[in-house]
Image 1: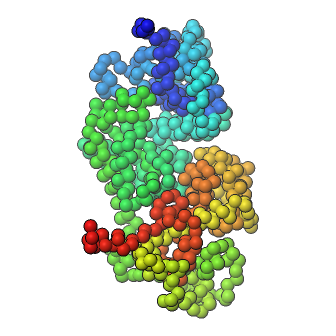
Image 2: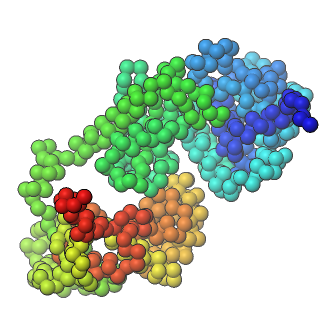
Image 3: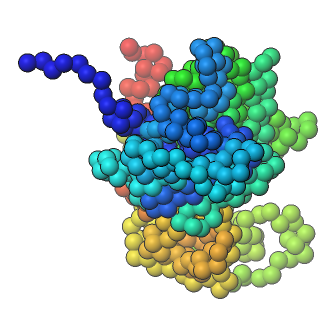
Length: 594
């Protein structure tokens, strides 16, 4: 027999709404900080314990609530932001639905304290899993304080979907950082387990706040973005293409100060970077779109993470043009007047650069360290530019250039080396008359990855005579703490007893000490999570690069190693390391057959 339709009880309605709005501790923190900003706060303190599951606390100095407002704030669809439909169309505040507080209160133990201007005492309201207590007067100084304890304690199934306390705390930290980037006139403090993690004074510039969030390797090369299209405006910063990374976790978009996630905006950004990044690389970006409120609908997603633009093409064009202009300006500034990369490459061929002296040294570059030079530089050599590679200098000291291989020496295990194309690809012909193009960077990356992942499991290391000192930002310090056990298994010896810094006392046996600090910069910047990620990163950063000239001897040695390496067809990231063209492919290309 069918059951009759009935109205759900209010507490169940709030729990259902909480499933849409309150996904995890960072969702709660986001809603509470938004309320503080809507109240005009110039100072916000956010604190968590146990990753936010035990406690989430937000205090502000904004406009408070009186004893009448407190219980009203815990009622669904009660808000001070809108009165009619027209207000909804032009909403500029973060919160407006009146869903956040009752939703949070239905899945936690909650205490609210607040005071309005001119009152001598504040008011306090406690909520236990949706049940409100009586409002009582309390001594209170200014603004509003909200304490959320035991999140999801009455819905244990929700706890199963939470990550570790460290991960949840990290998400809370990132939420506060996003608010700090969009509200420069507000001071923010974030504490985790009673430890100050973030502290942003009011009045900082966007660049200053980014320096506290991102590593120096990125912030030192930021490119400013500014563009306008009548009443649409774009501003912010993008990272230089050289600082691109394997993840898109440093792409932040704000629409009218509201953090949003939008595939169209990401597409416009990536298209602006087209030709400057690999397919799987992502830039860094913090971009702010200022659009008339009636031109954007923020009432799309329960958590207000998505928006709908009235004129998507116009927004796409503005972002694409603004970012592209910043990139072009940077490229122009880095280019000498009156020259171009094409004309210079045609008129001044680059000197050959010898990356490794022998086949054995390429297999184990550390074996060459400490080798005494055969003689001191001559007067003529000491007056040279000093920009030659050390191995190039060593060959000059020996009194002659290394002999180039003869024609019959160009055969390598069934392949014949023909030459280097665009200082990036090695052209081979196989014994089966296939044309083979090998990406020198991807091939070397595969070689190094195989060596590191097979030989590096032993954890063998070499001690450094002088430890390498590396300052750490707060976010880097936490990330390094999570990676430290993996790094030690790989052969790193790290001393992080000094707050805000780490000393590298030893490195893996197969890593050149001179590259240790640079590698650590990349490890922290790429947010690697596993040992395999680190092997891939080490291989990528130490491999020869596209655009580097190889002598015939160097190319042959690279091919020998590559041919003998398992899974040589792809680099560790899955990008092709080679392309083969057989007779059938060539005939189709020349339209000899269909």
